[in-house]
Image 1 (spheres, one colour):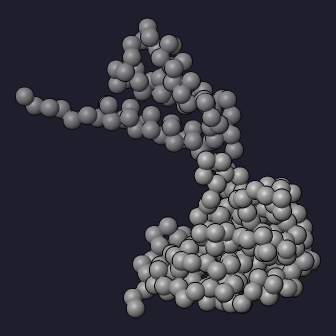
Image 2 (spheres, helix red, strand yellow; image 1 turned 135 degrees about the vertical axis):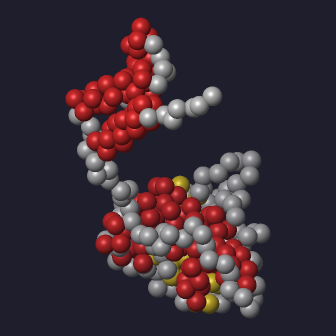
Length: 267
């Protein structure tokens, strides 16, 4: 059997905060799939888990899945599937867990005390600091039955449109894992290295652009003030760093040089 193609979007680059400060609580969270029907969904779940720093997968009474489809969707997260456990019942899957969060899109007497995912995620992370926590997802076609709710400590609702509330299994897992990962606060976007450009430096940039635009005939001297106010409006809507200003000044100077060295066209 041929291997699936390499994922062109798999950069294999971790955020620095993520790389150096893994959150052990995420490692204590177990994804449990009850009778998942489709190998493609299981593979996508593996990828979602790996994206968000989770690694423990348990399948409850699963059928035989199409392995090619599963691994095609898992891509470089196939190791999550390779390490998964299979059990016969949900009770076995969560026996050692201090908290069990069951996802449900349906209403009813046994489900009306649920939390939204955003409210429930911090509680589950707190529990995972000291004991295993399970997040449980039902079959693609029927979800979780009332009997499954007996083991739940948390009923979790993922907000969706009332016109169509049923989510794809792997999308539900991804949404849940994303909220857990976000609540862990271990991700931090890269910080801008270059400082904000001082006003004096910005003014030199605008002077360079005014000289260049006059040189190439973009506007006349009598319209320079008006046109430069428009350019200022464009370039000052967001922050300008020192590196940004250097680039813009370099473009202006190069354009001015090119205008003064344009080849002579012989008739």
